[in-house]
Length: 258
Image 1: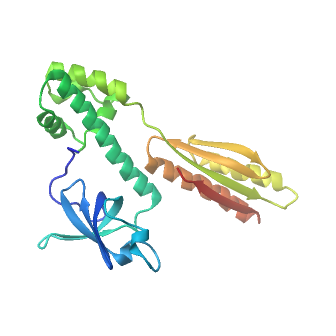
Image 2 (image 1 turned 180 degrees about the vertical axis):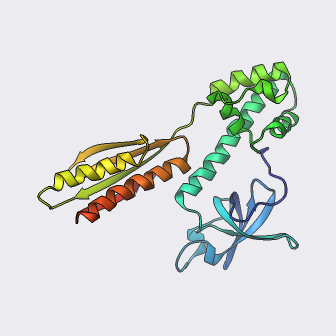
Image 3 (image 1 turned 180 degrees about the horizontal axis):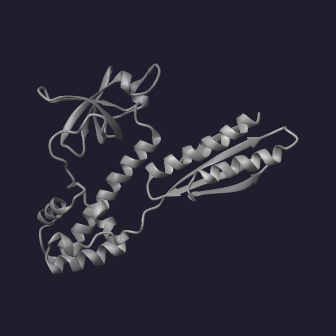
């Protein structure tokens, strides 16, 4: 992986780590993007009492952590695994995967032009305003960015455009779950319909609700990224459940794990 950030991460930043050592009271992990290492205290591994730390982490495992504290003088980085929710974990994993795609694109261009990949990668990264290459390439696919504007030679631009368009499609992520709605009121059907309408109205057109039978519905949220998808999922489900409870109905949402 060529993608490396300079210096140290910021507090509250999410970082991809590789577990290097598991001890009785903590875990040491290397930060893949910074060439630094950090420590996860056992209290930051998972909520509640931990009987066996290896039930959660083992050497070599890739994990997404949150940076809690940085001691600049000693170079210590305190990390947390338990403070990373599922949406944050997925978003970070997607970011790393995307940058690996960008690296493969640069590698293909370098091979085609018979030049060294690392200088080309660093040149493109330096000229990107994002600190990463994938958003730059994705902007090209969306039509928001022109490679001609970042001042690289024509042969490189031509090869990049060709391979970018082959390998990067417009982004879309999907979150699924099951929504159960129950009402024993005389107008229960209308209450449920109103709850579903609330869900649709709060999802900005990104929701698909499918009837499964007996008050059960499949909910699908589609968006450009997980952060947006998570927001509209929360807004839509909260509005539906809130409406049901306000009208003395029952509601439950169970997220489907990928």
